[in-house]
Image 1 (cartoon, rainbow, N blue to C red):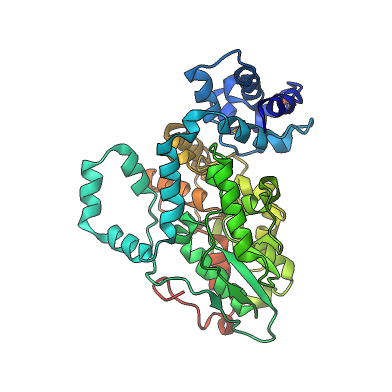
Image 2: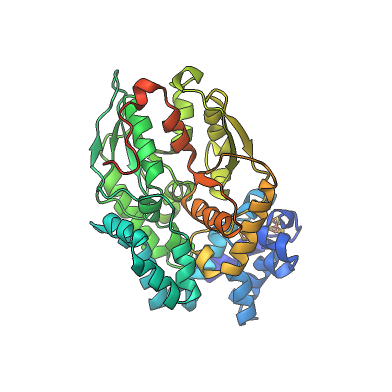
Length: 413
Ligand code: SF4
Ligand code: SF4
């Protein structure tokens, strides 16, 4: 968007304020500058050349891009593209340092050998030493490391169906950070899909979805990533491209905004399984447990939303599921949990409080960043509650003949 297009979009806001109760940052601070309406006014002042101050940028930077306001707006203000476009005009978002950081975060997970390295690091004394001598930013990043052992094997390009009849082939989008931290969920997705008779293709040269860049002022890098992913997935005769992290999913669905188009339909793993209608209660071994379900902001806006995951979990006999009350964004929001750590932790706390004294066996969430953020904050609060992706539980409970070949977390994927 050019400055006049930004102003035109911002002018569509009639300042009714109906979005305010939906905005997580406004709910915390009660400061109009931290509300969607306030931020739109700040954007008008900034792009119109009337005001430019560190305080103004701080209020804009504290926006999570969660889009709760966009869904609530009766005037149809496209807040997401608006805030993305404003960030792309601001030099501080496009500095060489930021480009390097995002490059590292989104490229390193694809390096061969990164998984053994991450696994060795997790257990090594070097980790303790680094935590002692480094600053709080490093410790915060380190705190996000999941507790489980990362498998050391690399991804294969295809996984054959494990049951008959054969039902075609699907692609799996791994994500960048998720490729490391969401690995149990990705393995579980492969297990569930191949058990249902599907061939799963994991293109080796797929890259980050581009969300981190798009929402942080670097749309041209996001567009480049979108183009690469289209080249990797299009033309493979796939029925669908499956994602496990809802944050990546909404970005893949938004590729037309970047001038790219994935040919197969893009769908969430739980939505795909629910809508396949191939699974019923008889497909699962019963599980007498109680789980809490966190719904990420990105899952609320994706097709199928939270309904498909709830329907899928309801198929598991004796499983009791409670969806957490709507608390708004948990503060993960891409790199927000690192760049706006104080606000991110306050937001996570509202989710933790919504758990209350509920005694549960697991907390389920469908987004990589939310799982890391909630896991770290649960540990910080001394709450012993494991966080998993719903597909891990689903794959684990798929009835015996389907799960016979299911690997443990240390097995090859
Ligand atoms: S609901 Fe829409 S029109 Fe109303 S203040 Fe919010 S952004 Fe503006
Ligand atoms: S995107 Fe989220 S945090 Fe930003 S103004 Fe809208 S509701 Fe508030």
